[in-house]
Image 1 (tube, helix red, strand yellow):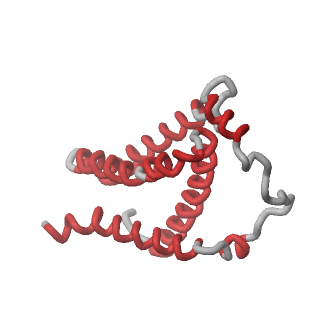
Image 2 (image 1 turned 90 degrees about the horizontal axis):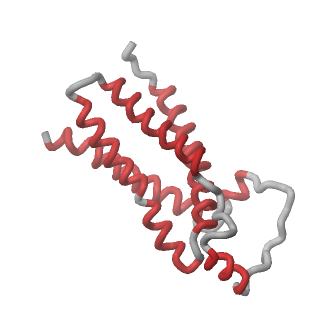
Length: 163
């Protein structure tokens, strides 16, 4: 059927947010292993545009297919692209560079004055409430939420208002 269950939609969006949150932390850790600290901000800024590039790619693919197939086929095509890219990452992505390449990174870490760990490492994982107490985390999270809300509103609703 083509019914709509608001509660199911909310639950799926919450699960999507949790999955995206775990994906971003892994991405930051992997990108941090591959690039030197002095250029990492620039690289992460470029990497952060991936979500916008993905939005544009998905919009163009769905608009090309919209007149030819049903809306549910578009969802399967876009899901297929995501699964294909996940498989490419699972097969080819390395968590850190091999020792024989990117020697500048290893020289940098050896010469760094911060080469020793300056925090105490604990066996206990931080609780969710402790993580929420990180200074600036909630402000940043809500800011990002509203930016994405405006982005989706302009991407998805504006064309209907203009036509």
